[in-house]
Image 1 (cartoon, rainbow, N blue to C red):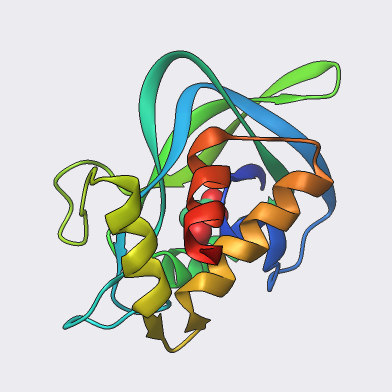
Image 2 (cartoon, rainbow, N blue to C red):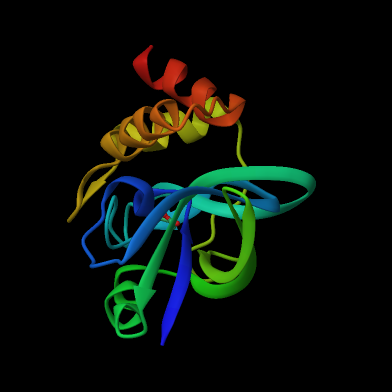
Length: 166
Ligand code: SIN
């Protein structure tokens, strides 16, 4: 069986899994925020980094990338996204049609959840953090460049880039 997966963070630019199709896509009712802690990729359990999760927001539209994958890809992705993320069913808007699919969300209250903080504090945490997958700042900059390629500008992300660059 095949499934659509919606990626809004590293799943946009770090594609380490096979897929049949890939398309720019959007989901409605969600916004991306750097509110999820990273113990295993961009930080450590003692010094977590900050990575993206989605928060529910009425009428918000989150643009990312959708992939059509075989069922067995979940084994890899569930492991990659194991730090507090869970699979959530979503309607994915592709060009000209909607498809059912899933996305990985770090819901409020999960063990790695950090929640909101002043943007300057989030930027400072991103600047100082690193983990097995690299520097946290590279996650932010890769995201910014991936969103620019998709033609998306988001104040939350742009402000963090400006703060992190000083
Ligand atoms: C995603 O990219 O869709 C999930 C969050 C992440 O791994 O950065």
